[in-house]
Amino acid sequence: MHRSRLTLDPDFRVGAVDRRLFGSFVEHMGRSVYTGVFEEGHPAADEDGFRTDVLELTRELGVTTVRYPGGNFVSNYRWEDGVGPREQRPATLDLAWRSLEPNRFGLNEFMAWARKAGVEPMMAVNLGTRGTAEALDLLEYANHPSGTRLSELRRAHGAADPHDILLWCLGNEMDGPWQMGHKTAEEYGRVAAETARAMKRLDPRLSLVACGSSSDGMPTFGAWEATVLEHTYEHVDLISAHAYYEPLNGDVDSFLASGSGMETMIRSVVAAADHVGSKLRDKRRINVSFDEWNVWYQSRFGGEDSLDWQERPRLIEDVYDVTDAVVVGSLLMTLLRNADRVSVACQAQLANVIAPIMTEPGGPAWRQTIFHPFALTARHARGEVLRTEPSGPRTETERYGEVPLLWTTATHDAERGEVSLFAVNRDRDEPMLLETALRAFPGARLVEHLELADADPSAVNTAAEPERVRPRAARGARLADGVLSAELAPRSWNLLRLAYDTGTAA
Ligand code: AHR
Image (spheres, protein in one colour):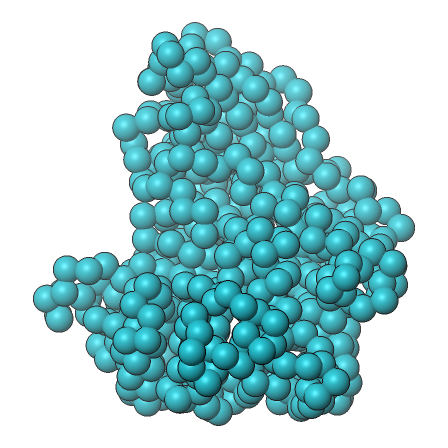
C-alpha cells in the first residue's frame, strides 16, 4: 500500500471558488440541442419543447454557466436564422459538422432554457465568416432594452426584457485550420480587439473572452496567446484555453495524470498573459476561461469530412467508464487548484456529445459515469480553495514526465464550517493510505468519505443499467488526534467531507 501525507490549513489560500468554474457547453452539434436539451413531442417535453428530464439532471449536475451556440458551429452561424417565428426560419447548412440545421432552437429558446435550468449564459459571436458588425447586431438584439431596430425586433419576437448576457466569447478556436474563417494570430488579434472595443462601447458591463489556442499541442501555442493579447489586452478580460484528454496508444498511466498536463497548460497560458501585461505596463490581470475541457476519444472520430449532411447525427457520443470519471474528477480538481487564475470553465459538452447526460430520442435520460464527480464537486467545493502540498510516491509517465501518484485539492467554507478534500489515487493497482493533518481545524469531524472506483474500471452506465457506476460511501476513514486517515482505492476519485462548529473553530 502507498502512503501519502498532507496538511490542511485555512491560511493556505489559493483563491475564492468562482461558481463559473462549474460551467458546461451546449453546441449545435450532433444531438446536443436536438433530442438533447430540446425535443418537441417527447413525453417529458414542456410547453417550450425542453426535455424536463434533462433540465432536472442539469440542475442536479450543479452547472452554473452554459456556453452557446458553439464551438466550431458558431464560426459559420447566422444568429438571425434562429430567431423569429419558427415557420419562417430557414433550414441551413452547418459547415463545421456537415449537418443540416433546422433552426428550431435559437437565441431566445436558449435563453428561456437557461432561465429554467438556472444557469448563466455565455454567448459566442461568429468571428469566422462574420465580423464586428454582426457581433454588434447580436449584442444589440440581446441586451439593448428597447427603442432601436434590433431591440424592438427582439421584443416583437416575444422577449420583452433584455437578456442581459454578460459573458461573451470573441469567436471560437480561431487558431485551428478546421475553423471556418480561421485566422493568423495577427488577423484575429486585430478583429477581436476592434470587436471587443465596440461591444464594450455598446454595453460596458460585459466580460469578454479572447480566443487562446485550441490545444497546447498546436504549433502556435504560447505565441498565439502572446500575439492575440498584444492586440486585445486592454479590451478583454479573459483568454480561453481548450483541452481534451484520452489514453493515447493505451497509455492509461499518462491518461490518469491528465490533471498534471492541464496544470502545466494553465501555467503556460498565464505566463503568456502576464508577459504581455508586463510589456504593456498594464496592471490588470488577464485570467483564463477554460471553456472547453473533458475526456474525448478523438482518435475514434473520423473527422469532419467523413460526415454526411444529416439533421442531429449521432456524433462523438462517447460512453464513459470508471477511469474516464476519475480523470474528469481530477481535471475539475485541477481547475480548482488554479482558482486564482482560472475564472471560468466549461465542460464540453452537456448532453449526448461527449457529455455527462445521455438521452435517447423519445426515450430516457441518464447519468454517465463522469456526471458524478462533477455533481459532487459543484455541490461541495465552496468558499476558498486551499493549497495542498502532499508528500508521497511519484511515478514516471510517458506524456507528462514524473508526476505524483496522489492528486489533491481542498476547499474551505468558513461561513458554513465545511472543508472538502478531493483526492485521486492515480495508481491503477495499488491502494493508498492518505494521512491528513487537521490541527488547524480543531473540532473538525468527518462527515463522509465518498469514492468513485470499481473492481471493473471499464464499467459504464447505459440506458439499460443507468446506475451501474455511482459514488459509494467508503469505509474505514477515521479522524483521531487531529489526523484524518483514509484508504484510497486504486484509480479512484474521493471526496472527504469535514465539518466543524463555526462558533468554536478556525
Ligand atoms: O466540443 C467539440 C468541439 O471541440 C468544439 O466545437 C470545438 O470548439 C472543439 O474543437
